[in-house]
Image (cartoon, rainbow, N blue to C red; front, side, top):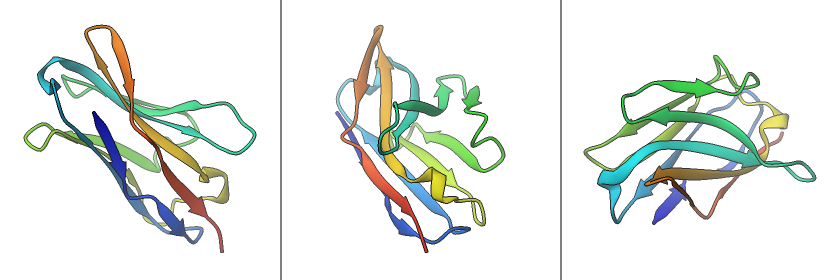
Length: 115
């Protein structure tokens, strides 16, 4: 099970940190990530991190967002860095976990970037 949190309303240039707490058979998770879906658009990968710590980012968020995981807490994070958020980052953000070849989705958390 994946429980995402941390979304909300933020002004352009602000920052947020999303969290995703994993429970259940977390030891078999090999990869975790964040997707987002903006109104009227397809869902897209934002960032992902493997068990070994290697990461990849969408070009649109490189240098602005940072993905990390705390295995002791079974929690995934997405730090949307200070002064980086743009209105086009407005979307529902979903965390995912890959385990035994299957992809599990969290329920999503809404991020709204607006003045």
